[in-house]
Length: 210
Image 1 (cartoon, one colour):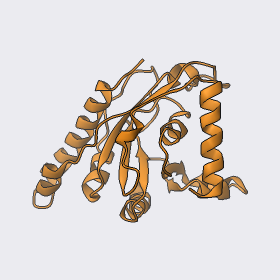
Image 2 (cartoon, helix red, strand yellow):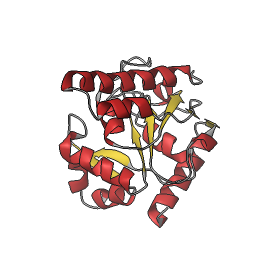
Image 3 (cartoon, rainbow, N blue to C red):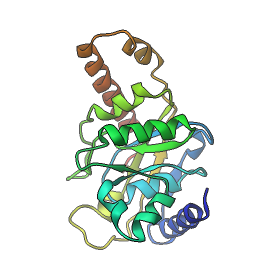
């Protein structure tokens, strides 16, 4: 971890512990080194730092591209290993940067649902995460965050001191689907992307929830 990342990581852990009384389940399931994709449900702005703070390794985050142009703050999120994405998702440029980070042995957080839930329930997965999984060789760890919707959802201005937790699942490899994707047609390839996304959401749903 860089100094800026470590200070932010430590501060988040302190806040999560004191204000939100957080609980972390099975962080040892996340590989401590090498590429890894953390696929999490998404309910709040708290989710990215919560998922990253629960494990003792640096992780790459996604951030809207326009934020990188904000003075000082742009430099800060770069120091947090953030990857710029467009308004509609990773985009071609963002996908390339994500794959580059994974190729270099980094970890990254992705949200299969694509955006924050509006009602606190798990949403259907979008195929984008499946594309990223197929394009990389990284193992994938499903992650379930709970309580963050009650603590700080879309309608709240100030976070509330509600108990939150993060649970890490077992590593998923998708070896067979990755092999099939090398030779299949475009129609089947799109089906594989969605199949991977759906499998991830299914595993996320099995993890400890509210």
